[in-house]
Image (cartoon, rainbow, N blue to C red; front, side, top):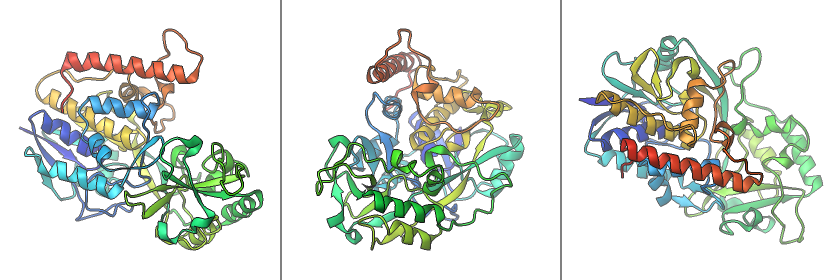
Length: 440
C-alpha cells in the first residue's frame, strides 16, 4: 500500500516526509523539470518564489510559534532551513538555492519515497492522495479541481527583485539591523531624505505596469501580505514610510539621524553576493523597475538578476469543501495541502502538508484523523481553513488573532504573546504524547 502526493513544493515535501517516516511508501509526482509554472525556474523541490525569509524566529511571535510547532512534529523543512540560514536579524532567512537542494536531497535519499517527474492532469479516483500542487497548479489539473470542488477563488501575488552586491554603491548604503537586533550585516539600508523620497514616490506611482490578462472587470484581488509596492504607494504618500520603507530603529551613521525613509536590502545567499529589495513586490514593467528603483540611493547602477513579477494564485473555497484535517468533505481519501487550501505563507503551507500527510496515513490505517487544538497555531490555521470567513473566504497567515483568548487576560503585548506560545506548546505536547505524532 502506498499514498500518492502530487506536487513537491513545501507542503508536498512535508506531506511525503510524514508519510514515509510513518513507514508507508510514497509515490511523489512533480511536473518539474518537464514543465514549469510561470513563477518557477529551478528543477529542485520546495522552491521559494516570493522571498527567502521564513519570518520571525522568536517563539513568542506567531511565525516563530508556528515553526516551533513544526519542529516538534518532525518537520523536514525546519532542519533544512537551519542548515541554509543567512543573516536576517530576528527572522529566519535562507539561501534559497541551498535550501531547495537540501530538501531535494533528503526526499531523493529516502528509501520509501519514489519520485515521478510527470504532470498529473486528472484527480486520481482510487487510493489515498494528497494534492499539494500549490497556488500555481497547472491548468489541466486546476480545471479538474475547480469542477470537482465546485469552483475556486483566486488572488494575485507578487515577487520582489534581486540585485547583485557588487553593483551597489556601498558609500551610499549602511549595514544595520533595525534596533540593532541580529547581525550587523543582516540588512543593507538605503537612506532617503525627504526630497529623494518624494521624487522616488512620484516616479513609482506613475510608472507603467505590466498587464495581467486574468484581471476581471472589478480588478484583481491582491493579497495584503504580498501587495505590489506601487499598489501600496497608491494608498497615500506616507503609506510606504509607515510600511516597508519605515525608518524607525535605524540611524544613518553619516548623519547620526534617522532618515526620512529607508529601503532595506536583505541578503539572498550565504555568500552575500545577492540581495533582495525587502517589501518591493511589484508588477512594474522590467524597464520601469530598473528606472524607478535606480532612483533609490545606492541602487543607481544596480544589476538585477531577477526582476519582480506578478502572478495569479488560486485557492479553494475551503470552508465549503475541506475538513479541518485537510481532507475533502465529499471524498475523505483525498487531502489537500499548501496555499491551495487558503493558508498563506511558506511555513503555513508546509504545516498543512505535515497535517495532511500525517492524517492520510492515519486514515489508511483505519485510525481517526487528528486536528490539533485551536490553542496551537497549526490547529488554528486548519480550523480557519475549514470554517473561517465563509461569506468571503480569504487566505490567512499565522497570527494570534485566530487563536482563542487567554483565560486570564494579559495587557502587555509581549507577555500576552509569550503566554499564547506557552499555552500552545503545552497543549501540543499533550497531543503528541496522546497520538504519538512526533517523528525525527
